[in-house]
Each structure stands twice: as structure tokens, then as C-alpha cells.
Length: 135
Image (cartoon, rainbow, N blue to C red; front, top):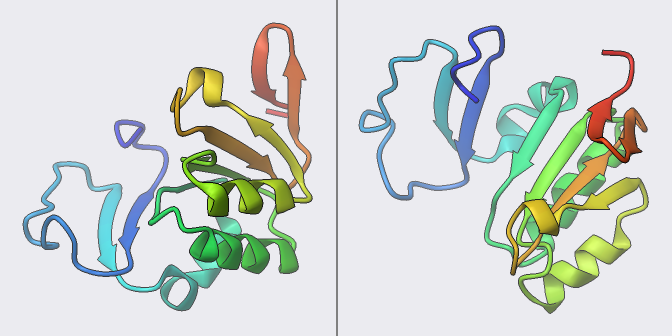
């Protein structure tokens, strides 16, 4: 998705993982690699993001913390989560979500699951597929 130069992308990791920031070189000026706690480092960016893609340790705790942060502050965007059926903790977290949500496992991670949370109620599901209303 970084090929769409009309949008800006931040790849945030809680800690150093598979590569350093210098190793994560990209030719795209609209992609930034960061290491740190997104809730402390870029909370306003999260709240203004149209789409958050969450791929974490899949233990349910960080997912719940981020979900509560967004929900408590009136976030109106979309959040994609992978591995919503990977383990009991993720199943409990997924079941606890109060906003409109869609299990996209059939078109995402076929075994471990993919979910979409619509915090703003903008997504309309139709027989033709998913689309965001008003856009």
C-alpha cells in the first residue's frame, strides 16, 4: 500500500526486531520506520489515522490496550487485526469488541483469522463486498 503516494505510512515496532531503522531503507518518501510505544510516541497520529493495521504478539493485552485507547477517545477510523482466532486470549479479545466488527477470516488469514473493526460505523457490507460510505 505504500505505493499510494497520496498517503503516509508509519511502521511502528515496540522494540528492535528483525532490522534496524537504517536497514529499513525504502525508496518511498511516504514510509517511516519507528521503534517505540505508539501510544506514547504518536497518540495523535493514531487518533487521526484512517486505517490502523495491528500485527502484534497476539496475546490480547496490547490489542485490548490499543482498542480501549482508541475507543475511549472517540476514534472513528478502521482497524485491521490479524490472528483473531490464533489462541484463547485473542478469541476473548475479539469477542469483547463493542464496535461494529467483521470477521474477514475467509479472505484474510484462513486459519488464524483476520478481523476489521469499524469505530466510526462508516463501513457498509453489501453482497458486492465491502465499501466505505461517503467516499
